Length: 335
Image (cartoon, rainbow, N blue to C red; front, side, top):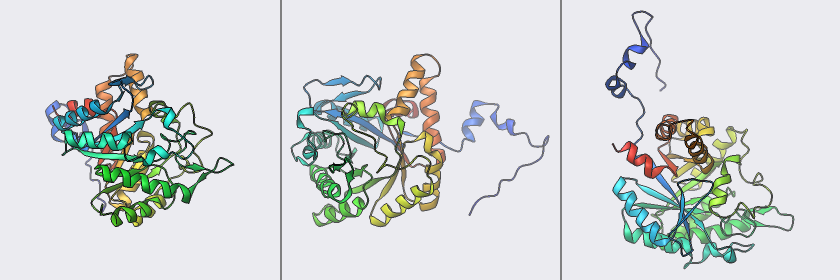
């Protein structure tokens, strides 16, 4: 039941009294993010170079397989529970159908196996969507008019999720926003003996201007044709997000996601309060880039901004945050 807010009258009650010392502020703090709340967003690539800097995301590199395995060990050392993997593949391997997404010997399965071998107790989540693998940059298959086909795309997505599960992924995370894909993935995983694999649904994923740096990171920015407004949500809608979440829970989602993060804290709050299921939020590339750019100009303190934004996600009701700041955040929060 909602709690009633009881306050006294001034001057007997002074709200500033508890704020006057560092120790009293810490003692009475309501929201405390910790390394346990973090999922480290990692970009991986299939090139020879160990690390390739992402120009639009200062401090973020595309990692090769060996470096990704080292990152998994680093996550374990810092107490970060899980890593979310996002691939950048050779353009020569991309085609209209995104066939590389279901290659059992492809980049993502190889990275999963290497990371689990290096740090088996770190959870590995994999993005289920076709955009890094298609020559047109969309999350699904297109018809002749350029419209993303729903059911035909789902048929590929379930195979992609199965490939990831067979490689050892702990979580498959459909981010494509196709209708019905959660139920179809859950059914196939269970049929194939992967009933323990968790599904994190990007249930409330909005068509956003904040994805730009990520598309650069995974190599889709230059090839994307049109926009994604026919399948990602309209940023003016809130009730629709609850319908999306409800459907995905009904179909078997273990956890749900709100994406982007900071501009959608109202959605995080509504989802977490309405459904009471583990609700994660993604502090996406554009949010990351904003903080990095402002900090580089000396306009804000980067470390303080990291902790403050993570606290905002937790205060809104998120149980966890996917963030490219995870390594630094774990260092700050683990002190």
